[in-house]
Image (cartoon, rainbow, N blue to C red; front, side, top):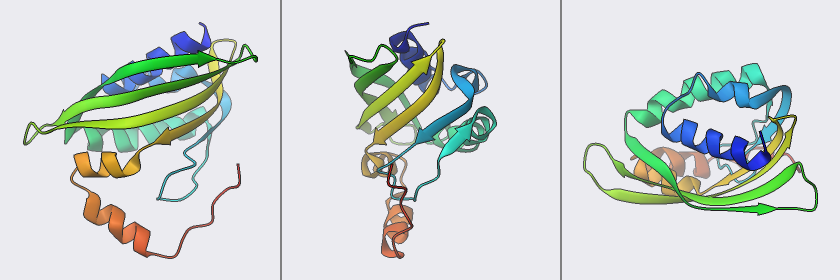
Length: 151
């Protein structure tokens, strides 16, 4: 698969809650980071770590919101393994029907059809608002800043 095809499977798999299939999109050893996360730097460095990530957060999100990727723009780079993908997760809050958009930018390195590196920039405030978790986010932000990885 091309980097763009892998990206599309990833974001549609997240939206469709195909959480068991998602880890197979990643290499056994990978490097996935969320540099803008207010929850601290927690790199995901293996397929097993990603399996835990998807099965841990996915069901909690699915209980509250439904969404699909929208406004997808994929930019190829001079490196054939690397793409930059801009998109929104557009959806609604299940309990209220309120609509939301969460802007995202992913920078992916795909080798032999598997993600070996990813930097996922997500609007965490918009996602916390959609999930009704702004109070939790504010509590995290009031704590001393966690050590951030420079990468």
